[in-house]
Every structure is written in structure tokens, then in C-alpha cells.
Amino acid sequence: MAAYEPQKSDKFTFGLWTLGNPGRDPFGDVVRTGFTPVEMAQELGKLGVYGLNFHDNDLLPFGASVGEHDRIMAEFKKALDDNGLRVPMATTNLFFHPVFKDGAFTSNDPQVRAFAYQKVMYSMDRGAELGAEIYVFWGGREGAEVDASKDAVTAVKRMRDAINFFCEYSREQGYNYKLALEAKPNEPRGDIYLPTTGAMLGFIATLDHPEMVGVNPEYAHETISGLNFYHAVAQAVDAGKLFHIDLNGQKVGRFDQDLRFGQEDYKTNFFLVRLLENSGFQGMKHFDAHPLRTSDRDDALAFARGCMRSYLILREKAQRFDADPEVREILAQIHAGDAELEEHLSGYSQNKAQALKGRRFDPDALASKPLPYERLDQRLFDILMGVA
Ligand code: GCO
Ligand code: MN
Ligand code: MN
Image (cartoon, rainbow, N blue to C red):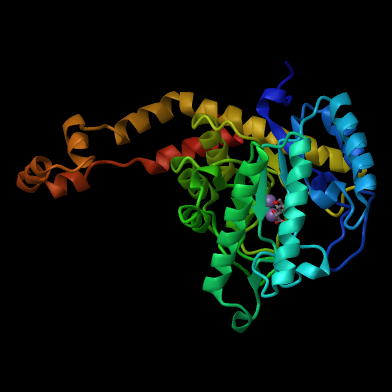
């Protein structure tokens, strides 16, 4: 097997909107022809990609007839089969059409909310037809610039009503969906409700079927606000809620860049990949990014190959780090345990409390234990840079 060549077992997926992106931005027009869904299946099938994900309208034009949708579905299914691809995840576009300019589930207008529900149900039906098992909710326009216009408590209640509704719908239809909530702090709204993965985890606990709902954290979304994505994902892993993940690149404090995975912050990406690999994450590694605006179609394919290659290189670096004798020696030193004390620290009992209260500690001795973090972090740098 050639080095860093993606395999189906890696479960790499791309959204239809990634290579479909023609490079338009708020300041400038289209710069290349985006890949059609069928072209994406043909090109990415050759590269070892596992599957393609879609928003309803990436595939099925808004407002087209059901007959037209059926024809497109059949054509897309054939392209998937011919190229050995699946559709593991589906989602709804609740942000593009002007009807959603002030939100979908959190709109003040019940007609807009009802239309959004209808659109989601139709899209869930289409996703299920293609075998999708994860349904993502990203509240792109569920936010505000003018807080006087919407009550923020009501907004969260409306989000809850919506997610509860779709859990029941999925159950009633006998679909196999797990719902994955994707947080983002801003863009396209000034402020988006439930802005972080942590906020989503808190929200999930308030739902009627929390067991059906998890998160879809995105590297760029936590990074925009300067948060540590590795920590956010770790909390989701601990909660058993990491259902899906959106991988890309982003600089802190910039606009929503959606860069190639690995393009920025190698170190955070290293810890992220190491976490995904070592925690036994079984879900899809989904690239939610797009080629640079300077890319032509050839370079767009280099972007797709690059996302996967970077992941596989970081995976190898993680193995190397975990096996490195110097790293192991330092970690053994700083993690040296105390089995008896650990026992006392987890699970309360009156006896443990008494024992801890009566124990003598030597804080000065504890404070003088060496913590060779400079050596450890330099070793990581050497490994990442390929000189170790
Ligand atoms: C973004 C989001 C979206 C969602 C997608 C799937 O910043 O635009 O990341 O790409 O992931 O809508 O729900
Ligand atoms: Mn995003
Ligand atoms: Mn995303």
C-alpha cells in the first residue's frame, strides 16, 4: 500500500458543497466551474474516499418538481454505485433562500418555521433513501444582529421544539438516524445561538431523546473564536456524543476560511487526530472545506487529496509520538501514579473523606517535583518537523 493513500476503512467523506464550490465570496464572483455531484463521485471515488454528504439543495434544486428530484436521485445513486461510494450523512440548507434571512427554526414567523420543518422532513426522507445514518443540523441563520428582535430564551426553546420534532419524525418513519448538532459562533449571523460544542452538549441534555442526539464539531468553528478544538472534541468524546466531525483549516479571529485540513495549526490538528485514533472514534471523518479561491479544477483535486494526506501523516506522527522512547520516559515520569490515592479520589465515601482529611501532605516537596514540559514539547516539535 502506497504511503498515505486513503483507504475506505479510513472513512473519509466530503460534502457535495466542498468541491462544488466555484469560489464565489462576498466580494467576488465565481472563479472556476464547481464539480457536479456526478463529477465528484467520479473523481473522489478514484481517490479512496468513503462517501459523499449533501444538503438537500446541493443535489436537488430548490423549487424543482418531485419528478425532477427523482430523476436526479436516480442519476446520483448510479454514480455512487459505479464509483463505490456511500452517503453517510445528510443535512438541510436552511440558510440560502431569502425566506430564511432571519432564521428557520428560530424565526419569529411560524410560517417560516413550519416551512423549515417541511423542508427538513423532505430532506430527511431523501437522505434516508440514499442510506444516510447521520443527520446534521447546523443553525446557519439561527441567530441575530439585533437582540431586541428575538428573545434568546425563546430561540433556544424553538431549537428544542425543532430537534424534538425531528427525533420523533425519524423514529416514526423507522429511519436509522442519529442527529448531530453543529455549533458555530458567528457567520453568516453576527451571533449564532448555541455557539460552541460545549453549549450544544448542554442543550442535548434538555431534549426528549438525548440518546439520539450528539454533536458535529467543526475545527474552524471553535477556532474562529480562539477556542481549543482538541479540548472541545475531547469533551464530546467523554460524553459519548461525538457522532460526526467536520475537519478543515482556520486561523483564529479571521472570517470563515474553510481551508484544507491541516493547512493551519499543525499542533492542534496533531492532538485532534491522535484523539480520534486513540479514542476509537468510529464515525466519518468529514472534510467540510473548500479549495482556495485561487485554485482551478486540478488544484481543487489537489485540495481533496491534501485533506486526506494530511490526516494520514498526522496519524503516523501520533503513532510515532506514542512510541517514542523519550516521550514515553517523560510521560511515565509525570504520570507516575499512586493507586491508593486514586482510589480515594474517585467515588465518595465517608471513610475516604475521613482518610483524606487526616492525611499529611508535604506541599513543598510536591511543588518541587520536576515537570520537564519544555523537553516534552520540543520532542513533539521535532517529531512533527520530521527531525526525530
Ligand atoms: C458552514 C458550516 C456548514 C455545515 C453544513 C452541514 O460554516 O457553512 O460548516 O458547512 O457544516 O451546512 O450542516
Ligand atoms: Mn463551517
Ligand atoms: Mn461544517
